[in-house]
Length: 116
Image (cartoon, rainbow, N blue to C red):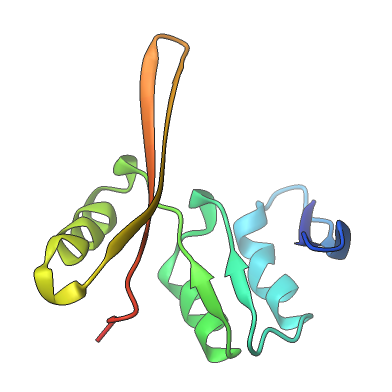
C-alpha cells in the first residue's frame, strides 16, 4: 500500500493498494495522476527517485525534493558533481549527523534553482 500524505494537516490524501506481485514503484504514477500537483512540492524517499517519476511530477506542474543515497551510483555522482560546480550556486540548508548501528550517517539538504 502506498499513500500520499498532506503533512500540514496530517491527512492521508490518496491511498492505493499495490498488487501482490508488484511493488509500490509501479503504483506511484497512478497515485500521482489522482492528485492535482500544480504549484506543490512533492517529496519522496530514495526508492522512488527515478527519472520517469520525476518527469511526471514536473509535467504535472510541481517541484520535487529528490532524496539520493550513495548507493544510487551514477545518479548520486552526477548530482554531486552538479552541486559542486560554482555556477550551480547551490547552498547547504541543513546538515544532520546520526550515529547508530556502528556507522555514522551524514545527511545534507542542498538547494539549487539553477537547473539548466
